[in-house]
Amino acid sequence: MSILLTLFVAIASGVTTIPFSVGLLAVGAVVFRKSRVFFLALGLGLFLDLAMIRPLGYTSLVLITFVFLIRLYERKFETQTSTFVFISSFLGSLIYLQLFAYNQVLLQALINALLAIILFRFCHPELVSGSRFD
Image 1 (spheres, helix red, strand yellow):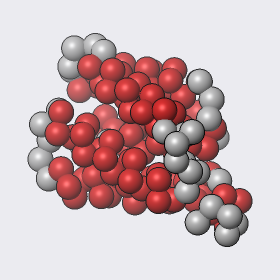
Image 2: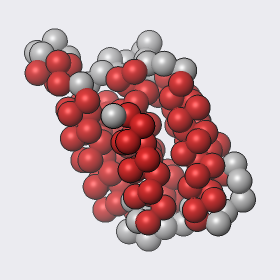
Image 3: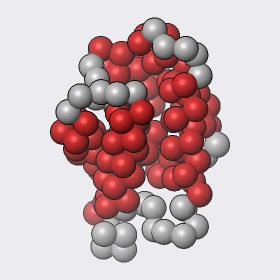
């Protein structure tokens, strides 16, 4: 399932300007807590650079830095909450869209953050339904 989701996000991010990959990586970093999310960020970044005809590595650098910051704050904050996923995907999308000079940055970042919340609730329902985290 994660492979199909990754393929969908890679294709959709190449077609639209909404950075679905940032939301996917925010959810992946929070839910899985594995180092393979860094490889996913690298692969998605390289694919997006090829699809958008940018120099290779720019998007990968931004996405890997984003995942690194999420992993850095795992010890300081309670990261497995809907609030953290919303804020991190919103800020990550906002920075991504600003760096690559897209239009309507706030609207696209908000849409991406809402989609990340839906994906988070779908991927990890036991974290959402329990009163321990929200």
